[in-house]
Image (tube, rainbow, N blue to C red):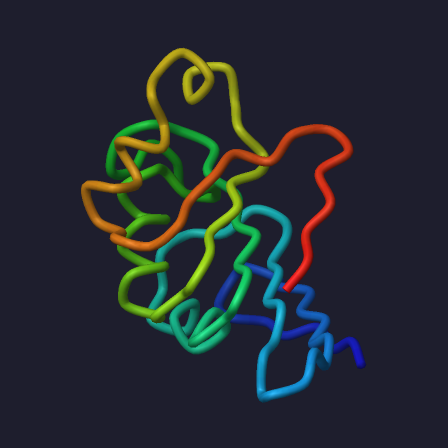
Length: 118
């Protein structure tokens, strides 16, 4: 079942994929910025696919940076974080280490052809 929600200016397309045992995959797309509503969208996701456009704690009004993504995943209780939508500045640093400053769970950078399973 797909639904699209609006949280302030950010749009999130959130397919809930039943996986048994109450597990879910939580995805969100498009430009967004830190907002308390993001935590609700990502809460307790088994796999959270999230943009991480920049290194640091905040570099844009419409894209998330590594520190923001790490904080969001940690507060939401995400089990596995997959980073997408990286801009060139994010590719020049150890982005996973920057995310880990805020997030203690499993994190990885998506690659072309990545297949995810629960």
